[in-house]
Amino acid sequence: MELSNYYAPTKIVFGKEAEKQTGELVRTCGCRKVLVHYGGGSVKKSGLLDRIFAALGDAGVAYVSLGGVVPNPRLSLVYEGIELCRREGVDFILAVGGGSVIDSAKAIGYGLANEGDVWDYYDRKRTAEACLPIGVVLTIAAAGSEMSDSSVITKDEGGIKRGYSSNYCRPKFAVMNPELTMTLPWYQTESGCVDIMMHTMERYLNQSENMELTDGFSEHLIRTVMKHAKILLEHPEDYASRAEVMWAGSLSHNGLTGFGTDGGDWATHQLEHELGGMYDVAHGAGLAAVWGSWARYVLDARPKRFAQFAVQVMEVEDTGDDRKTAEKGIEAMEAFYRSIQMPTSMKELGIEPTEEEIRELARKCSFDRTRTIGRVKKLDVEDIYRIYMQAR
Ligand code: NZQ
Ligand code: ZN
Image 1: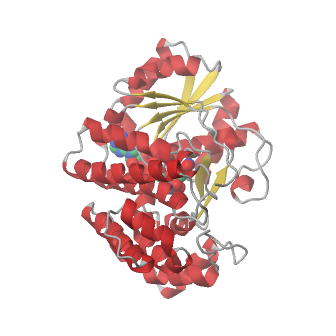
Image 2: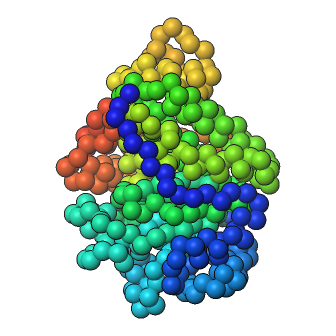
């Protein structure tokens, strides 16, 4: 077991009608004026936004609003949000939406609480020293941003998607009503399930000796999400399945399933972020499209761990040969992705990059050849290129 810390300061209000408590939750944070931040319109259509405005009004909380956050949220709107908040004297940001809205809110929060250009943090030029307090009303189970220390923003020019992590941005509270996710298109539901599974798989497939308890949580979490992802494909209004997936989404990315590990691999996420930046694909679907190619490429660096994954998570038979068992596990996971209509290649994801574009993706992913990615096996620009080529 590695030296570890666990910090999950977000208050969770979970269940039917939870959003009714939003006004009081914001009020008890002691703010003067709130920015209600939201996406492209689903919260207007469902009536949720009006209910949130009413809850804030009932609690006597003043607010302004800014919509228009797109999936793979853009830096340009973050700048707009920072200006609006400065003008209006906003001191609290309420994100009503999914990972994209929450991440945009976190970036605005960094921009307001620190001097200088907020992109510097994502560009790894500086580190933030504060963030405005953030609250969340979650509408999609996926990114886990409602409890995570991370935010991911795309710079409009050049489609550069970069993440930045610090404890300052962890939300003060998250309101989670599983019913709110019932209006999701099936593709977003399933893409979200993949992302949730991947947040634990990234931590589980590592180079450390894990705690039995952490492994047990992780294996069960992934299996639970797999079970309910299948149910939701047929029965999108199944409340119990929505609840299982939603809670798994938070626990998968709040540090619980990485406790005692070396922090995990995260190469699949880095590979996907470039796809999201350049081709604007849904994050979870992008992860599914490259995971199998990554797994086969790095398998020999850790066959025992992949074999454990195959047996404990994918429930394949132990062949007695770690490599063979591990390969069966990877095949089984790809079969699962197909069963929930998620892609296992870029072509199935709907993109067909040329070889030149693959070179470009690899160059960007290696930060212009200045970094390697991954822990199971450290991957340089050539490795990254080969994995992308295999994933075509
Ligand atoms: O914009 P609207 O109209 O709201 O539509 C959204 C969007 O098109 C829609 N949607 C959300 N809730 C809905 C709904 N439609 C109907 N009913 C609802 N209840 O779903 C679409 C996707 O929303 P988005 O917020 O983009 O989804 P997700 O939560 O998957 O977030 C993805 C972003 O989070 C980043 C990803 O890279 C990506 O940019 N990530 C953030 C992380 C973090 N901060 O910790 C970790 C993740 O690994 C991930 O990288
Ligand atoms: Zn993710």
